[in-house]
Length: 292
Image 1 (cartoon, rainbow, N blue to C red):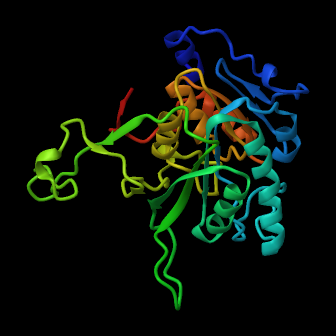
Image 2 (cartoon, one colour; image 1 turned 180 degrees about the vertical axis):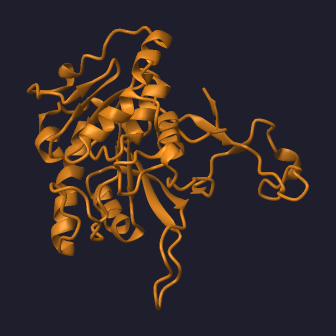
């Protein structure tokens, strides 16, 4: 049985009326009970969305480092052109976020330094620079070894939803005992886990075919990242927008966590549809504990 069908049985809720958040109704490439996917340029879809309708935006755009995607994506623009393009879709994303809603932007530190400043110019409130440790490149001559990606977390004013997430207490790899050190306060450990930090060292790379479509040559995100974004900033029934659907990881988390979603993907919509309709690609194991 397809995953989407399983979720309909577990959560027998009315079908998501996504048309209600658009000024004009675009044609969806794919629909589930919880979301809709559009195989278009995000700059054609975002302007159609009504203001203040989205609870959380998560964006994982191309990093402009020359990766080869399909024919519709240019990942090697002049720096000034890439930044101007980024500001165009960021403005639209900020426009559609509800007061108190969240914006998560995943990119290289090089770009997020500049794009974070632009989000501040637009009146968004800085919450966190989250460092996600992923050792996926070779050392670069004359530089420190790059070992993390940046996840910016901004909100439109005071966050309307901020849920506490606890991660499993680390264990010693030699004796398997708990590593009880919470900022020097060993007796303050909560048995449910440690408060989620702004440095994530527990994100596995997505290399194995079990976690990644065989048609997806570009990088894919771990569901542990999108699970945390979904759980941290939304409640069941809220609406999440991802303007760069990629491999569809955001939508898998939304389906599993029972959130509504709007997705846009210019090159890989067919792969996302296949992933949503099958169980071939599995989510990563996630031991997080969510409170509230």
